[in-house]
Image (cartoon, rainbow, N blue to C red):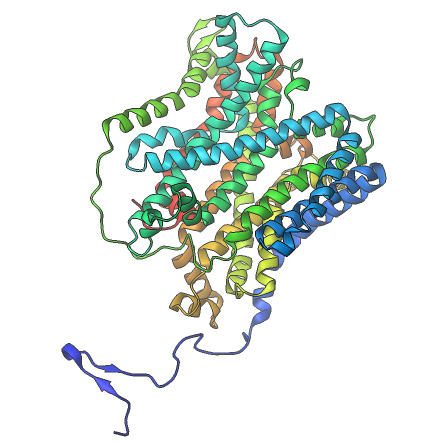
Length: 604
């Protein structure tokens, strides 16, 4: 027999291949490689010019003003990374050297406490408590998602708070806790300190718990209904929390980064939710830095140096989260073939009642805002809402915020796609891919304190203050790293698969665009929605670099909060008005884009 072996089982002609048939159809370099480099240039320019260069300049200013702070941060960073690496590679020989990096961490923290002073150190202690609280929130959300994974529509009220800004959350919970304080007769300063800490924690929990739980629940349901992966959650040998962590690591990366950064830089809710006389006793490192940065009698380098430990903290957390995830070579966001439908089983009555109770409690802050709006100074009515609706300053601020959010979202999506595509095409086992992922993770968690100072100086020097351009480009630069991470995760494919062959093969811009839309369509929608909501609800960037001609709505609302008691009805009305658009956008895209874009799998 001289021809190729052939088989015809069941009238199906099968011919054995004599050579390996996989990989790109055409080998070699792309004849139009410069197109890819040019497409990635906008993202590179934005991140380097507005994040990397200002961050380096901030370090230079910090070295000049507070060299002890910079040195102690360096010791802590080197020691923490070294200790983590030794623990990960558990061998008797390596663990012998563990006291060395641990000693560097202890020495760095001792030097840092002396350099920051009493008030600055305690602000960082409270920030560490916030990060610990965020970690507990992630664990709690993971447990609730597993326990209530059979519940369906009762989760919708829990998702709504994520579309509401921290500033609005501060208004709502301040109204609730002030009312309860009057009812309980709280009068002492110590009791009020504990009371406002509880208020801040409740506001943070309200904002994030439903969103995180919803994503975890969707990811669990997607794994359970996938025949190839369902055993990951039921296979014995390891405790259930460990199995959940291993199966959901890619989703935990994105969600953990978002929650960790939000916990480390709690800012908005403190400024509007806590009276000015109490802010010094419950502030975070971000609020303390803001006071230093806005004090004309303090050198700019002092405030910059104070923000460096926060950058080290969140950078280390981001690096810690991404370590295991970068080993994954499969996409967690790309659409998959729909698994066989599994009949939905109704939740047990007790479990359903508990979920419904929690969902009802999630609506209490919104009800409080509605009641405060209707309870005007002239009696019950719609007077406060009418005044805010007719206020030209608020309408102008909402229009400005909409333009800034829309244009920043457009820039982020357009600039992130080419870079994500090129990074997804890199071999996962090459150093370039690992370095790129680490750099993106660090940049995505970079605190605003690391780069806002030099950027603000540049804006004022060249007369750009009061325009929308600085807000647009800075928001776009800040949102690019996490957008690239999400899109890269959506475009990844198993080595040797047809999707990987298409990713690494030669193609023109039109073919690449079709590949991105077919593979990462939900992830594109998720990136756009999250970026728009984040920019719409932003307060800290607008507070520091906006001017009279480009005032976001959050600054206008914060100005009204200076007379909180007299303006509570108008504050509540403005808060409700500002929350309508992001909440509607969140609910409209939750099942179509956000869930499949951030967790993967078919919609269920």
